[in-house]
Image 1: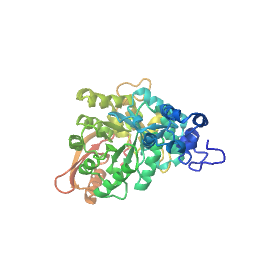
Image 2 (image 1 turned 120 degrees about the vertical axis):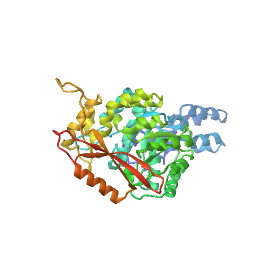
Image 3 (image 1 turned 60 degrees about the vertical axis):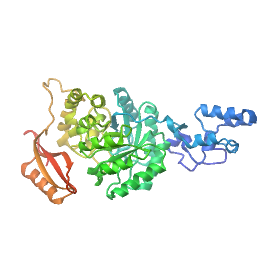
Image 4 (image 1 turned 90 degrees about the horizontal axis):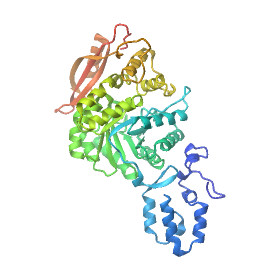
Length: 467
């Protein structure tokens, strides 16, 4: 607690993070860190033993911040303090962060009760399940985690719980990106204080910054924060595509250490790997293309599918990273339905319904999102059974097959965000019925010309079609 007669106003007294980790209060960090026992020791110690006291404090992971120590010329103490961050209620060296590793990082769906409140006990059990299943890392408070609907206090609670359960076990990555550079810096510093190992920062959405604007945005964040940054390029949600050239330029910043690539264009990974080197981590953001992405030189995936099939996705990534194409593709094949059907409605609607169907979480989700439509229940259920996440009903024989398997291909050429191209695609879908899924996009050689490949997804006759 703060010193007598002083009240902390940095965090609300009711803040879950302050109750759990009082040392994150910046204004009174001296009072919080310099315990009564430490003060007594300093009072009793002579100048001869002052160095031993400092060494003792550092050995226990605490940074001495008393003015009486700083004024004695201990430059090494000041240097140590600048390279520390709060983690688990103590100040730890930046070197103590877990390094980012290859493999499967789950884009965690935040467990909620049916009324939309955070389900903390379930969050703990889900995190423990991922630890047991071999998940390589966890990404919290991203799109799948519904971060945009959570209050600052709720985000602190999620970060604190994740740190308690997985700190030092696997890398913890926190989504901090917003439309504003200033707000993103604030959120990234909050994640740093809460003990995150890295921050996932999406390109600013809706405003469509230029390449120069993206360089300025990410550079400002990296300069202002003492935490590794993973950039996130997802043009389908943000409306802006960060080019390979921009990515390579930003990869030279010492604090920008990786990329989550959700462009759906696996031809980018080769050039980025050859120029950025092995230290720059490349994670796919497309579950259905992640196996091939890693086989072509990527490091892993930040996965929605891993919410329901953590062990399987981890095994796919391990085989792909080892270059074992046969095993990787064979292990990934049963997950194909999940890779597709977990996006039959906006993420995270299907995956939260799937987790509830598996009995892992409640079905709570926050507006403006609502629970998965009934028309998709059987489709997702079949994919869960096919992926080994749900058992088949008693007496049912054979392998369950998810509806809407892609069987026909439509190839179209046009310009990015060309309204004529979009209207043409919609007309084909309307005329022929059924769903179409984007198979891939390839940047052409003339300006922004590109190819969009759509695969026709036929529905079973017994299943109502949903255009």
